[in-house]
Length: 160
Image (tube, rainbow, N blue to C red; front, side):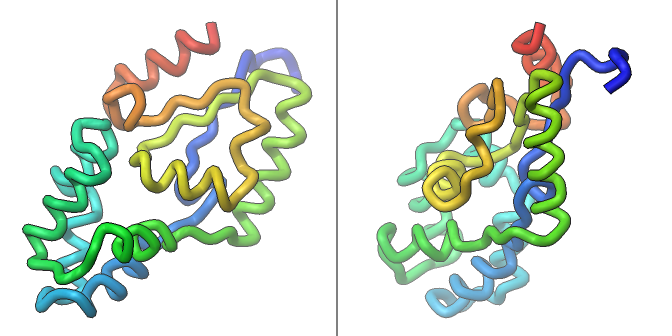
């Protein structure tokens, strides 16, 4: 590094790990009369997801809202793997994870992600992608989501 940089901030989704909400939408469609497209619209960048990703809804409250809006015939226990099993590593993700390992010895690195509690806890158990970061800022913990400028200010402040 040439000294111009003081730190590096990485995103999680579609950078360090990939995901596809359609996997969950297709699986959930078996427990409702809604189509995978209708389910996808509920999950992808909806007000409900925003509330969950900013920690304003607990996992059980989120599930109840999903269950009500989709008229789901499924238990919370059965919902969890469907909701969580949407993540996978691509060759590009593996390449970026290699960059993380190289940069961590040179500069402070921070992970900044819009994520809900269920997904983060699932990822922590199944993927070793968090241990190299000096700081981790998660939307559900700080009550802010990208692109809100305040979450970026928080990231910069945490890196001094």
